[in-house]
Length: 332
Image (cartoon, rainbow, N blue to C red; front, side, top):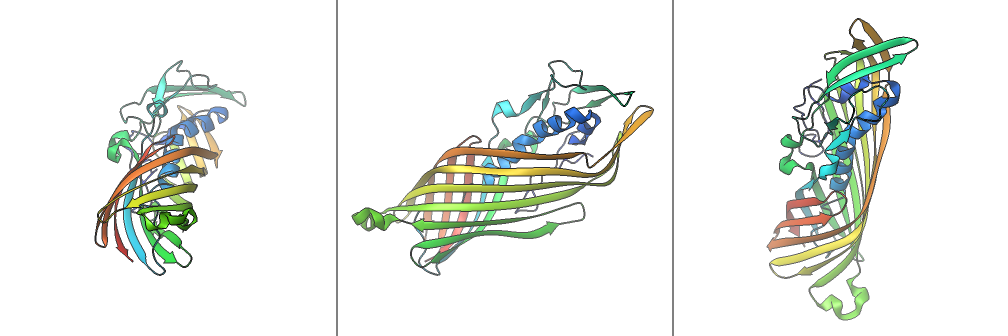
């Protein structure tokens, strides 16, 4: 399969087309002990980048809307994968005989596709073949970072509360489809600090949750014949933050500190007939894995307020540093 769909689904969720010669399905040719290790190492940076991106961009001010006031924002989060996570080693595996050779993760270069030799014994039969490890998709990504677009509606509630909603119904086609749901709650606590509520400084607490699922069909290619092949990605992201902003007539400064975390799963189902020259072997539902990430974060941002129209941008320091840029249309 020439398309490894990881990240961008329409403008709302995510799938990105890889320019690698083969998808990560090539790693199914390894033995049962190595298969999970290889696919996990290849996919992990994308899972982490998506989780950190999904947890970002929930606010551009600590000030909450008045009851029934609202805004609609359109933003893009871009999580930067550290250089150390762009490659992984093929050494220490039972069926891969490449010594200290390294291969690209999904966040690495599309040109890093080392020839990989598989050689192992199963049920008294020796299986051996050679394939090119899949390259990454770094050159295809905006800013060479994992993107996470976000469309968000925020609504003011009584008692200085504000609810934030991200919702994308299942969209896509027969080959790839996905959906996204996110909800956040912000509570302004400026009044707890006495006369501070008479100043431009606002302080709030925020908690948010986002879930996303993407599934795509896996097709036969090269040494892998597939029946009913399906890959399912499911991601959950959680964030809690204390945020503050200085709201002046035109320029607004905002920032926050908190903790981001999340988990994701990848399930590959179907029947896969793998060719090793004249020999074949079949594996069914070959792969299930879970990925976890978490990091404290610090955010600093700037917003321009031009009446009801806002332009904002921020940068978050965390395990995968994340930039955010967007616009908003705000009423009350």
